[in-house]
Amino acid sequence: MVEIPESPAAEAFRNLRAALSLLGPEVERKISLFTSALPNEGKSFTSANYSLALAQQGYRVLLIDGDLRRPNMHRIFRFPEAMKKNNFDADGAPGVMDCLVGEADLTSAARLIPAGEIDIVSDNVAVAGKIQTMTGGQLSVLAGGRRAPNPAEILAGSSFGQLVAEAARLFDRVVIDSAPVLAVSDTLLMMPYVQTVCIVLQAAKTPRQVVRRAVSLLAKSGIRPAGLVLNRLRRGRGVGYYYYYASHGYGADEGSYSRSYDYHRPRSGHKDNGAS
Image 1: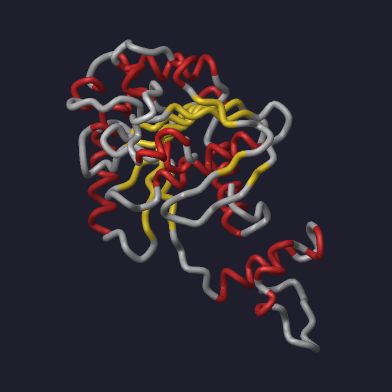
Image 2 (image 1 turned 60 degrees about the vertical axis):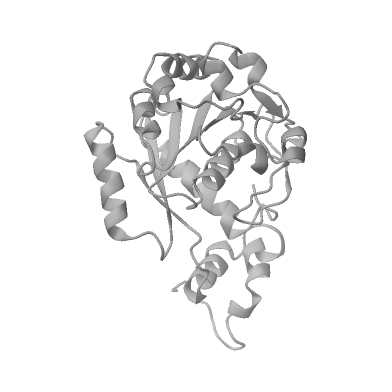
C-alpha cells in the first residue's frame, strides 16, 4: 500500500476500507467507483491503494481502469511493456475497451498482481513498497487497453453493465477508477452499474463550488456519494500528536507511528493522562 505498512497513509486507507464496509450488507457494496471533480486530484492513487487494502484483507479484488480517456493503472502498477513506450496500449495487451467492444474477455484481459508481493508506484505520491497480503487475498487489474475515439457512445450501450456484472460474479470486490465527473460524461454513464461512489478532492486546492457542482451532477443521476476523500492533506502538528497517542503501546517499539513522529513525543516530565 505504501512504503511503510504502519504509516499514517497506510492506516488512512484501512480506515477508508472500514468506513465503506459499514455502509450496508456486503451484497450491496461489492462495486465501488472513485471519481474526482477535476483532473489530477489523486483518484487513481486512491483507487489503487483502496484495492490493495481490500486484497490485504483477503478479498479477491478487480481494479478496473475506467478512465478511458486518460488511463493510469499501467503506470501505477508498472506494467513493463506499456511503461517501456509510455503508452497504455503499446504492449498490445487487451484491456477495458477491448472487453467493451467484444474483442477480449474479462478472464484473459485482467492481469493478476502476484499475491505475495505487490509493488506499487504512483506518479502523484511516492508509494513504493512490497506488501504482503492475507491468505486468499488477490488483486487483478483490468487496464485501459486499446484506444477508442468514442468512449461515451460505447459506455451508453449495454456492454459496460455486462462487464461489471461479470466482474461482480468472478470477484469479491470490484473497484472502478473513473474519469473526473466535471470533465466528461463517461462517469455519469457508469453510475447505474455501481453501488458506492466516492469523490476524491485535493486538500486546500479543489474549489468549494466545484465540489458542489460535482455532487449536484451525481445527485441528478440518482447517486448520493458515500463520502469525500481528502487527498494530499499536509501533516501538521495535530496529525502527529494524533498518531503518536493513538498508536502508543500498539505494535513494535511502542507503535510504528511514533518512530515517524519522534519530534512530537511529550517532553521529559510530562505525564500522559490520556487527553490529547
